Length: 262
Image 1 (cartoon, one colour):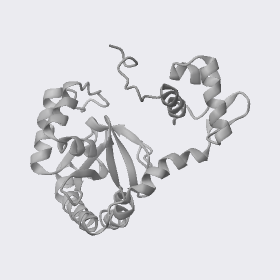
Image 2 (cartoon, helix red, strand yellow):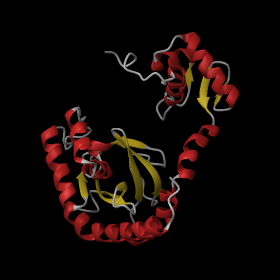
Image 3 (tube, one colour):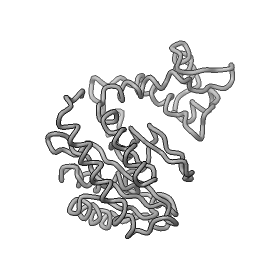
């Protein structure tokens, strides 16, 4: 059975296609022609044109007649989520305190499918190869926050994810064996944190800790990424993990007293 045939009766395919047009634009494709949008989204030129012009009418796309690009108004779509989700607002002052203490960047992330999404971030002035901002998506299997978030999923859901997983090798150090990844997730679950050593990007180490809501459910994770030249894997655990754990404890304490907005 094809994906289209498996859709529920309520599924609106035209809406899905419209969203695919928005997602076609990214850091590698900030501007696209009509033909490029059609090709990337698997649409006819006529359909792509209708979607693009509708988005332009709504103010989400700008065009000079040949090239199309997203407008700043598209940020409203992401802001609607953030404004209804209290956790980033609660976490940010605690992340700022952590960054001031360890002098390394820190971020709050959530799980979305096979990716993690940054929903709050406090950077330092050092430049890391990857440009990370709120809304950035990275593969969960190669990130410390991803390891934490998947490790603490219900067992059945975690196993289902692993059965269909095909982890991509992003560096020579990335774990791509499903069996090894399963073992690593079990270790993360037992110890309560994850350290990823140069699996996402060579020269980059990261430690992450889960954030639990008032029911004890893991809803997010906080990380501290560092350059390998400044911290060994051992110093990450010795010097960064304790203040990170203390930070998450303060975030969780606030979550217990703040009424949820979700």
